[in-house]
Image (cartoon, rainbow, N blue to C red; front, side, top):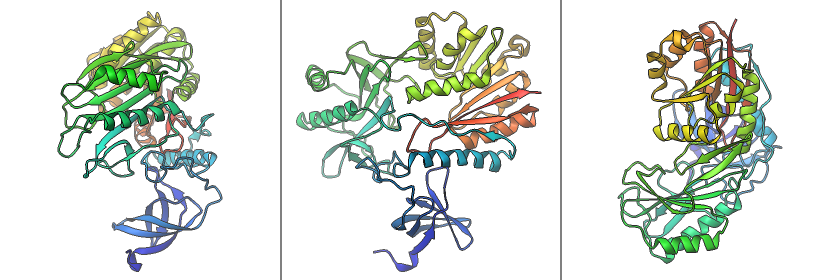
Length: 453
């Protein structure tokens, strides 16, 4: 029973960067789980802070004209699609507004043009990779699905998901039934006992090749032949099956050892006429078709010239550099993760790219150890993780005096912080172009190009 003093009526006015809705009460901001701009809601105040409150929407009194029926039956329970009940064009509008807010509030930028956000053509079935978790309830019930919203230790049984193809739903249903029928225990994140940990499904958008990666605890496998026979009979579209084992306590879907159970052990994807090999633990842009549009937009902004030497920092599996290589003189990729560098070298070889090389290590170490005269005023591309650029990396990039810096970001807040450092050093940022890679979520990708006057 909720006490009356915790229930309040609020007018929602905005959406916050983390997906929560925003209202105001008694001179303070209120961040709410649930609700859309333009709605009047009854909410429960669950946390009081000095500068803001947190609340849960308990009832929508007046609905927004932009509210739609969420397609997924798990919406609200699942932690994935925060905005599936908001019209897609409005999602794009609010995402662009959040980019503007971050640039103005965190970067101090008032005059930068923020282009209209580039949306997707199909806002469902766009993911080429999904991770599903095994879980055992207190009563011993095995579950296989996704995390409940806000809970690391609660998994619900998935019946359908509209982010990946219907084949992934069939594989999830098969694997759940197979585990129960054969008595294979799920891993317990509290006791660290049990076996099955994750089911990872990757399917290429262009080639339609399909990988199933089963991540388990250490120990002997159950009947491998039966698993492969039954799984490929249930879903004959599967092209490879992988088994990853890990004894680490950290709850991430990456194995310490890997075994190929069926097929070649990888899938292939095509982007802009190039072919890329993707292994179980490889990084690859999760939305293949929109990644192609993102890179086309980025290269248009970069305007590469035949004589340029390009530093591709945080290059991952080398996708950007490989796609760019035939337009410039040389590309040097820098990446910390050794497996990603190995994949990058392999993909460059497979695509017959001879003017690209890769350095395995920290970006800041590469920039510190490489003499400035050897770099010779390169063009720089950065595509860092959500944390953005290390301040020392920014400092060293500025010291080598690149004529152009192309920044691809998955976090407008850290982009705004880093952009301020570049502009304080004399670089100009005329326009930022946001791209929607993940419809129905709060995530935003963007591209900006800095240049010297």
